[in-house]
Image (cartoon, rainbow over all chains, first blue to last red; front, side):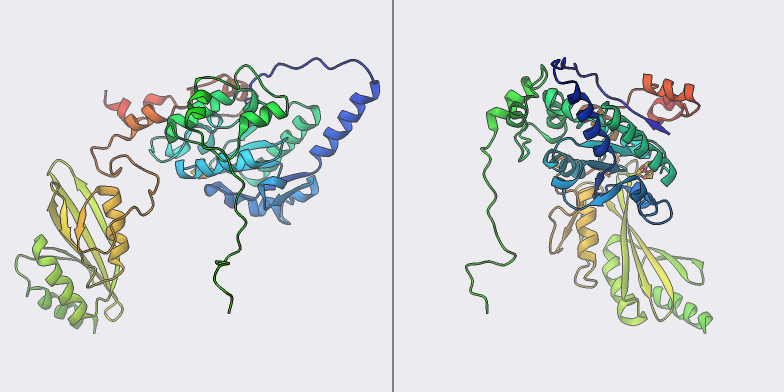
Length: 239
Length: 189
Ligand code: SF4
């Protein structure tokens, strides 16, 4: 069972010009849809359906879908089940670090409405309040066939250019940030500066800035480059 | 052999005052003791009967009785049997003794119970946050903690029967269960 919820994003009229530009875009989208890397990050019990989906029995690789270990190189963030509030923070950090275009797939009923944890204080109920979700695959837990058919649907959407909800995160950042602040407290800040990124990619929308981003700016610590450090303390001489 | 051991154990347990022993099966004994007799009981079980493994401490909040129930499950590898020692302590102030000096794993169980129920264990080595490290609300397993109210304040419910679900139902998928049949709080009303 597959369902999707994408907010309608105003489409910018493309400049008329080189007729081959369209063809080239189509080609890029086709290639993109045939080479997808799933971030290896498993949140809930639904993750147990992924090993059979990835390995020889159902073999996702024949569709060009492979696991990937680092967020920077991954295309798909697969949320495989309930996200506890502690996990949700990490999921958001991970999502923000992924390079665009990126797609979020919510597997399991828990990502849709909390599933059997609907009454729990510790799990998030609606994943799409905190990040734009391209596709939900409901079920407790969905079988590998359902996962693969969902990912095929995602591939179709990428090919046709419909799967563009990652832009929604930039264009409606205020909405997502507001929900995050409601849950994590007003001093919530991630190490990624979404507003600057939105300006850089020219993805500023009407909803990018608002009361919540103003709140963020009030207490935002300037971001600094991370210190490079090896596993041991360098100051101590190595024996 | 087992028969002998059970008799011997039953006799041993009689040494504690105010104890109530209920034998559930040849390998399971439930004992209820007054709270102040528990350390002596555990010492006896560990020292003289080989119950060296504390498998868990569980906690139940009996809010109507104004009491917490603590259950110490100890296992013996020699007798192959489990003794569950039940005690009740007052909900307020909710303080009890740590059994860390008898069973070291108790440190973890006590820390967990402290975090979930707010019970203080005197003499436990560490009463800091254990799993709920980013939680600053009240101890969530206490019965007076209202999970639904917390959700209403911090999270939001998925819409009931949203539009995209109707599309799915039209396609032949999706199951509808009305919230009245699902939410306990709404059933009562
Ligand atoms: S929907 Fe079911 S299988 Fe999936 S995370 Fe929730 S409880 Fe686990």
